[in-house]
Length: 354
Ligand code: KG4
Ligand code: ZN
Image 1: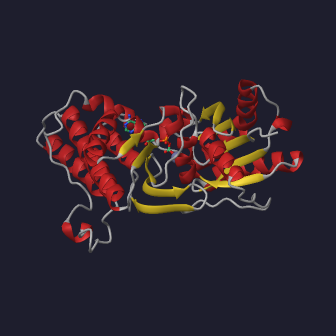
Image 2: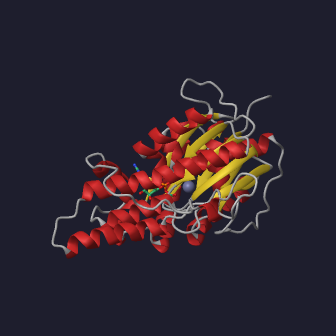
Image 3: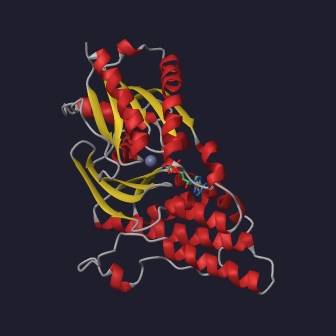
């Protein structure tokens, strides 16, 4: 009686097989198996390899999550699974597995949106056990290898608005591509983060995409790309800078380029996120995605949010990157809000908007 629902969350949209278990807002288990290592030699995630890895990792990952939480499948009240956006084949593995579990157990299935789930981690109790009420007009800046979005979230279950996104590469993708140009390997984010520490961020002035007045406009008369990002021009500028040193037979100043590139990414990410937040009445901003691990991003975003009077929340890194706990947390909220479950013929939706 009055016990909070026990929810299983399944995430397979990219290269992470994630199974999370929550009871209401309490996190009981968050188990992740990554196929990252298998993609390294290709310099990016190969969809078919990711799908096959999910197929192999799902049951062991589920088993470990159940053991960690000290529960059994029959104890679970609901099953939540990422339905999109993501890689089609990868999503299908999670969805098929979740459907099988739901059918066999008779428990309701909730297909959830991956981007909204990233915000859903904000619902989980913090380490001290205090319940983190997600305030109304929360926003989220999601920055990963696959997405770069700013969202306004009035309610996780019925009021999520996409305020802006990248029109080409995701921020993490820009890190990965630039790291490849600099010969720093994959994944590029951590490599550039580390290399940049020894460089001069002012050595090069790389472009800040979509910051020209014609794209930005004004608050009263916003341009089409006021809250959008573009990182493809930045990558091209880095390639040209490298080329010039190589042509002149001079050593490439790798650390300076890495630091200047990082400054350009982080500057435009934070300035646009804070502007979008201010203009949409966002008072609490949640940072999520793999790029949330970036030291300079955390530092500059904290500075700019403080200056704008916005409360910044940065969940622990394992909850920022793709995981099952975020899916379970959103699932628990759907149960609490009495949103009906999904039909068992629900499909994967690779391009699903928020
Ligand atoms: O969220 P995530 O683990 O997976 C998805 O793409 O969904 O994000 C991975 C991305 C990669 O592009 C990686 O290079 C980037 O996050 N990343 C970083 C850092 N750590 C990981 N980017 C910048 N700085 C970092 N410290
Ligand atoms: Zn993600």
